[in-house]
Image 1 (cartoon, rainbow, N blue to C red):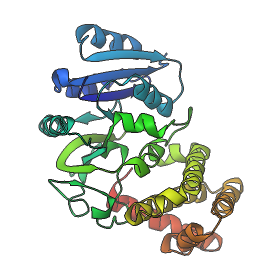
Image 2: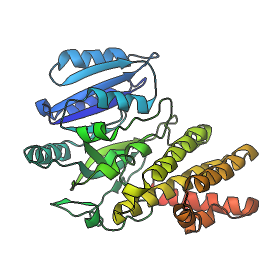
Image 3: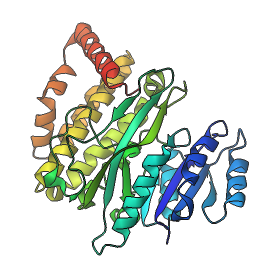
Image 4: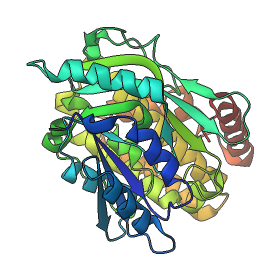
Length: 344
């Protein structure tokens, strides 16, 4: 069995996928690299995947599938993974060699234990095009270091500080056991990937290394604000799935106080992002969609506690400031936060 399976979702990625793959080959025979060609048709993505698979047959597998979107490619990666642990690395991102080797060394230690590790967290870097100083997302003041820990050992996660796809490695069987299936033809499903498995995660470890380089700079990236506005219906769809998940799993999440607080906070920030993008689009249709999203949330939250907490909090009040001046202030606040955290 391989130690770590790494899925690389690729869609018309010929211009940058080699840098990603080459950075992962450093892991050697401990690693299984799954290049998932998600129906690429406009360039040489499929051929490049096959060339790498032919050159490194014991490490790389090329998976070709019909186009289904990023979530579908991640699903395919999970289905084909044979490694003990599983990681997603997007085709325009890459990893740092020294941190990568440290992660593999630590995973190797845990692989021999009777009680397996469920999730490893590490730092990631916002590798923004043109930025002289790169923003590092690290967790040293939130998560215990050099020890296995549980949710109750975590400290408070501040707003804007969350465990994202770039920072996690899951145990492969945990992902299969929890039955996660990301929706097809939908962007922003990475929010579901780092949300739905969390109630199944019992044993965690934080390695304080800057492992993942998250590239930001292409005009067509899904996190580009204009692109988010054009795809706002997909953002709302993901948001509603998160609401549904919290409603369906309330009884198993709530007894774990720290886990519940974290998932509540994550849902709050996604509600804020969806609402601000809907406001930012400046159309009557999307302003009505914002109202409908909050109505949906209220209806799904049967006892009303979660809805009331988020609606009456600072962000909930900010997002419902009345009239055009209120919406303008809300968007201005969002742009200030955007500059501080450099998230797109």
